Image 1: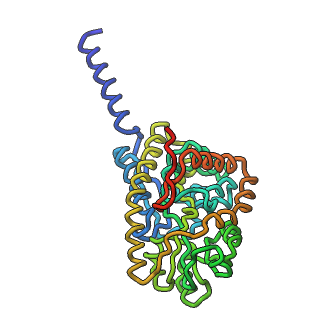
Image 2: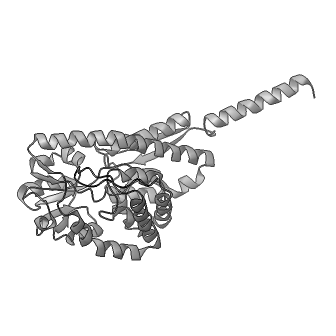
Image 3: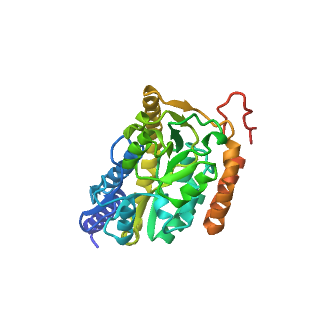
Length: 353
């Protein structure tokens, strides 16, 4: 074999390696249909969901593109999830409350007062225990879960009275997510929960159908609920389990290299979204205060709220071994690394090392 021929072969091999490292090679560009219920850029999850798609396009040199079917084009939240399961939509920004219709394990992401928000959002992204749970959720629901997303921790907003302790919420008519699970645990606090959609909620608060609602600051801002509520009590009981979902057959058809691009892009996007999201929450809090809302920074008796919902948590743990394993992992993490107190009167954790 001539030296020139050997040189040509080596050059071709090097070029092939460089192309493989630059981006997964496809026969032709592919457009995937994506959906979300993110209706404006005031939402905390707007950045992460759109940044993820941008990163995939960049890292595949445009071999993957996305057609965004946003603003409820395909129907409501339930219809969107079912579309991904059927394959009429390829990816969506999903939610644990909807997935509980198909997966008992998804209830783990909605267990009240289990995680410390907002900081444990990052634990959900990086923890192998959370990854294992998401794999079980995906298998039960018939989708692939790319990653946990970023959303905002939830609190109780109301127009009746400040909530400082569990006795204050007794008898209040509180709007919850359209989920029986959410209504079940909320009822254990003494509140009177009921469901409604977001578009209906403004008038329901204004006319007294509900005394308050469980929600978050950025939605409070974007939907102008500050006009029909007076008090916000910081609780952070959960963040309704945001998830990036991919149709199962679409995911199975990806090469290992493409799967890695999607997984890495999802993780980077939500980590970036965490910092961006905290600034958005700060701004939305300021809007609430500007419009006369009073913010109660912490519960006087958080331990009583935690105790009140334990029967519900015990029930959910029995439904799925995956949930029980996940809860044990969270509890161990919190024992090993206790939450740092913001109250200067509270003792700080002892150094472990």
